[in-house]
Image (cartoon, rainbow, N blue to C red):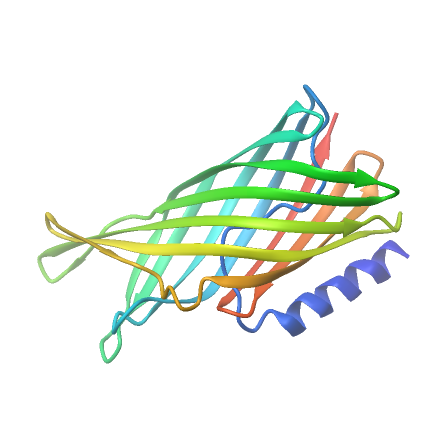
Length: 228
């Protein structure tokens, strides 16, 4: 049953995630007070449109996750790892920045929890700092600055807890040419989207998280989590 549920979830997310992006929202499973959740996560941003004629960017990120229950209804979410950036201006060759440091933080606030139904408000931020590259003798440096607010609701069916919701996001591309810094904003006409995901229990204290975000750009996240 669990294998069938995982296969179904992957199919649904793949089918709808043709246009999606933003920091993963984690879902509605929060740690209890003074409890820690640990895990690993891969986050793929396939396409994020930038403002004006600055084209688009993509990124592949890998994180270790820690969430701490400040109370039963409020969690602090932290992550650290590595990520790359590929940015393609309109009418020009793209620049690929090899993976290096990445990290993030956020919180989730439980708004409703009754009869296997939960509702959660979340804030998440990711910052990606890949290696700089040289084009000729000119140093190019880049950073992704990714912000998100989300509202999710879930229903627990024992074999899985699917969730869905809405989010607002902004994902900026900060670019240095030598010491000249320029912040390129993401396309603000494409900053509201939908989230669909699922937490699938593998054991009593281990679960798989799968998530897609769509409507505006392209992204998928998958991770495995556990608690003591």
